[in-house]
Image (cartoon, rainbow, N blue to C red; front, side):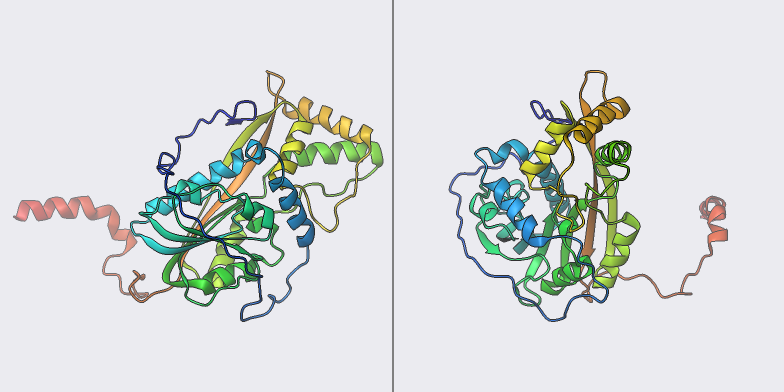
Length: 346
């Protein structure tokens, strides 16, 4: 559980959190995101106002103390870095898609990643990125239109960015396109149960006060769809798992303030422009009544989907051909007796 006041963490820090940050080297480049081969995916929906999302992220990055709101993204960034370290290899060239202020790079070291390209739609986030010992290049680009050539990167990472993409299948195809053969994609995005307490409280209050409700929390991808989308994009040897992070806040309004400070305010086209004051007060009361803790704080749940996918290479392990097995599952129960008989014969 994360506590907003004091940000007390109950998880171990990333293995790279203690690295030296002296003699940092950083270079910057700006490139506009251009369309790569292939058009928009058939049937792609236009759910989010991407220009508004860019403005929200830029506003958040311009705040006097943006680090005050970085606790969640830093935590997930450290967990992505842990998964990078779990891969027993070095990555000469890596890309962070939707990097924000660089929440993953700060937890990695130059022995693991040789050079890091950090891409985001918000120029202020790139300008105010966190320090890292890895040489970095900042690229102004949209997640759906990565301006890189095919087979460029050994590693692509993404943390809490892809849930704002309108065309997620295309974004995953773009990531697969820029990966080298045998390259790996490691990502994280918010899941469907994220902020369910806030969603339910707003819906109940708005229904009671205004006779109906509008979506105030953006829609999220279902976990059972994520593996299918990764496979459809061309990835293999897939791993998808879920986790939950719970943060305690003094109240609903402090939660909404932090979401704004993170650049995570709703940007759906069908969002309601504003809520009446009495509806907001009623929602805060419902939130505290239904979900409040004994100490008076209220919890907010963030569900995180973690995903790993590899680009095909002939050196990768492949499953045996269908029908090539020499032992049936029915005989597995007899394995102990067969082994004991073999020992006796010896």
